[in-house]
Image (cartoon, rainbow, N blue to C red; front, side):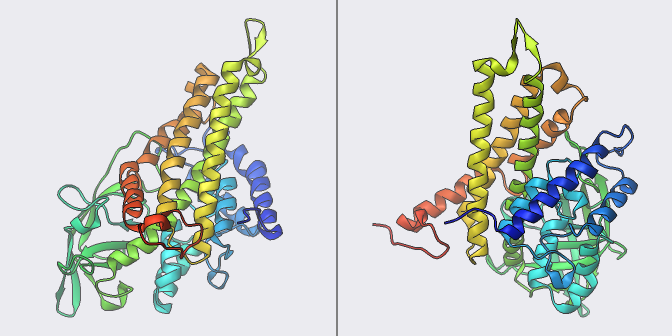
Length: 406
């Protein structure tokens, strides 16, 4: 198993790193670059996106035929980590959630007509999107079988009623995917529907305030009260909603990890720059054993996280589902991001706690990592389920290795 990058992917990674250093990191330092929700202003984002497109660093996950770079999943890992050295990087390169996951899903399962209407404008960056699945109690969250939002067949169309919340990006999205119940079948009771923000029968009830900086469009609560969707805007088929969700969320969880590794590396780099020059009691902080141990713990955790991510990415490129591998990466990298930024703030002292660096921004953002796309506890349950049902095959290296329990 060889995790070295091909010359082509390494060249892309270097170009991304150079672009981030030359164009995006300086933008972070602009005093008026942030919007009211602590993300990059849309006009400034548009300027940087135009430069990224001109540099050929755009939509790395999308097929070349549809306007993307067509990188393999291993290539995503290298690209996304380098992109998220800046807190703005993924948005600039059009590989930020939730558009990233929706592009991947629609590229795989959308019909040609759906790709023309719903996907291509998303890849071009002309619109943004949202994936509406999570519901307030007693509806579905990590357990999609609990979804209460319903779609009923009325007059040749599907009529959707229900409520969703914490829908990332909904405030700026034009294209939506909503998961609704079309029957009570435990496996085929859900269906994915495409709709546009200008359609009647739904509304944004509120933009939910959160502790951290927000993605563009925030995290919103949606009410569906008679939204009509035609048959041609059913994604995959009736009853395939759970399958569509699985196709989307597996790689999407892994791309979160790829981006978080970039933020973790940025955090500890800020700290190392500081302790290398800051002195106290006659010695540079970097020379203190206690400081070195803290940095070593973070570097160790990041190295493990990169291997977990690359293994899962390799399995996906081989055609495997990589369920337990993605869950392992999600658990570890979420913890690593929080460890990295917390350690960096501690080493930087008051400077780390202030807004003189992006550490406090990353710290508030990082807490969501153990919740989004499945809480860490749920992913531990997923791994345990593989162990209990997979026998010694749970330890296989390849995507298809299975051995019975002995």
